Length: 188
Image (cartoon, rainbow, N blue to C red; front, top):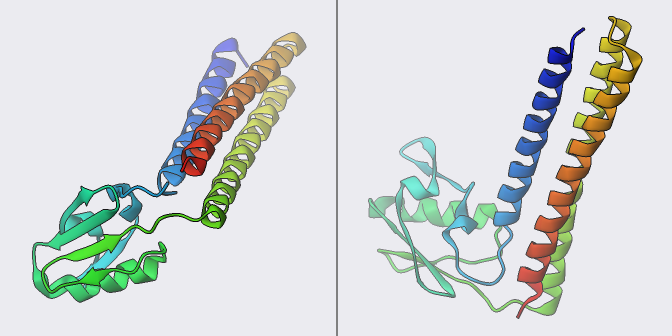
C-alpha cells in the first residue's frame, strides 16, 4: 500500500462526508420557519396523467406574500391531485382550491410548533452525525487493511489522525448549520 492509496481513501472519505452534509442541508431546508417558501413543497409528487411527477413540474409556484404560497397548475384538471398530494405530504397546511389556483396559507407559528421544528432539526443533525461516524469507521477499517497489506505503522497512524480531523471538521459544520436553523426557527 502506498501514500497514494491513503490519499485516495482520505479524498473519498471527505467526499462521502460532504454528501452526508449536503443531505442534512437539504433536510433542514424543508423545515420551514414560518415564511412561505417554495422549498416547502420539495419532495411532494403529484399523480399527473398516471405518473408521479414533482409538484414544481405541474404548475407555477409563487409566493404572493410572506405567508402565502400559490400553485397555479398548467392544466386545471389536476387541481384535485395536487390537493391530495399536499394533504398526503402532511406539511401541516390545508390547501385551499378555488378552481384555478391552490393557495397555502402559512399559519403563524406557536412556541410549541417552533420547539417541534427545532426537535426535528436536531433529529436530522443526529442522523448526519451518525452517517459521518459510520464513514469514519469505514475509513479507519480500510486503513487497518492497508496496514495489513504493508502500510507502515506511522503512515497508518497519520491516516487515522487525518480521518479524525476530517470527521471533526464535518461535525463542526453540522453544529453550525443546526445552530443557524435553530436561531431561524426560534426567531419570532
